[in-house]
Length: 394
Image (tube, rainbow, N blue to C red; front, side, top):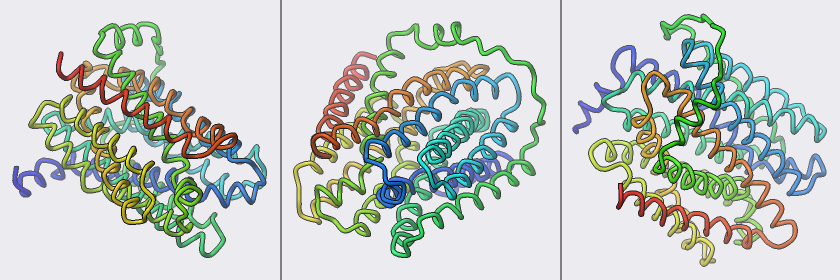
């Protein structure tokens, strides 16, 4: 597929405008959420809390993010996607505004919970809307939207490095609020859907039974849960790990963290496009293998050059996995219930993944960050074996 065809099929017309608006909202979410790990040491010092207490805050954010996937998806199936998207962004803005003025542990936890709720409602409605708009180029559309989020994550790391040098970490949240408001306006103006809301039955039992009755889906759920647990645990403390265990300066650690997402800007659209042409399960298995190889290498090396190389390898695999696997899953679910079905699936694996930061914080408090990361590497290795088996027998 040449660049002209790619541009006209993904960015053209109404679908293209919605892709831009939805990606802008995800960009804001990713800047905000991924600025938190580099800022976490400063937050812990200001609030006088332990790494475990900080990990609990991040776990709450990811837990509420997970819990809101199914209701957000179900509501967007029975109503229009638009009001759920708008509601998610409004709650997100409230969470980041509260975080910017938080001076106690309770307000810190409340703010992160609101961020989780807002982003959880937004994500599934966004994915379902993209699935509606891009039936033929779903992998590419998911890759473009994911790459926009990773550009936000890159910006978050670089922005955090600059802000930390000024010792005013709250300034990092200003562009998050501004971009969220721009996305709100764009979705309001460009989406032709109404704001109608109907009484909706969640139908939890029937949905979960339908989604998880197949053995393949249950195996995919286990693989994705292992992947997200490892990623959330690793990412939540990566800058801290690089400072404590690899002796990098705070600025270098923040930039290395940003570099992980910079790789994603490049590889996510590519992996999505490749998966539109090849078997998605094998592409996902290959991505997960590269991710595991890079992460294991990171644990073993100590020179700066090798640290950055290992992180690059890890990032290439880790960032290639989500758009491929999510395109595979949305292909598998019925179009009339894709929001609720994918929301149910993501609720479970995101819920498991939300425990990752608390696990790392707990193990690091009693042992070391390296000990915690070894456990995460084992999770990735298990996922590689399971997904390879599934691809070979599928």
